[in-house]
Image 1 (cartoon, rainbow, N blue to C red):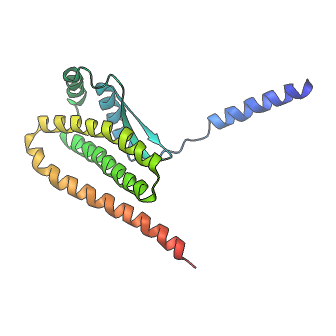
Image 2 (cartoon, rainbow, N blue to C red):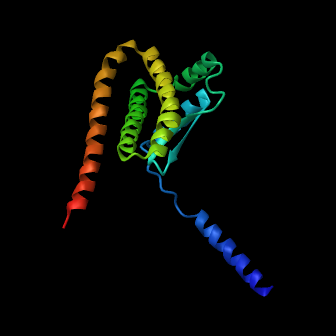
Length: 180
């Protein structure tokens, strides 16, 4: 009976100490971009988070997210009315980069034949992200139609940067495997 009274406070102190440890945040979004992400996902009734197992941020929809889309788009337009068009373009680029990274990660899982992660990304992470990107793109173009001519170059540069990044990761793994 006495040992129980000694262990209980020790467990409580340990748990309190664990709660104070910093949480690792490998998100590609800066704190300002996270605020914008929070504002936009809230307007569309989406959510966001970070999946440590996959190593990527994600945006998810709820079962009711696609209901009453015109009202949600109005809420998104209201949430973005004070956002600088340049900031919105950079935010769109980050979200688009996330989609390209997911597709590269999915291709890697397919190559490794890790079907659980491949299916998870393909069926659960990419569709809501693509929907979210579509909503942001629509708002971006509503603010300035001339932006559309810049998007092709932006997409190409992001796709090249992400491909280079994953190539370097692969080469790093190969160098480590062949190091003597």
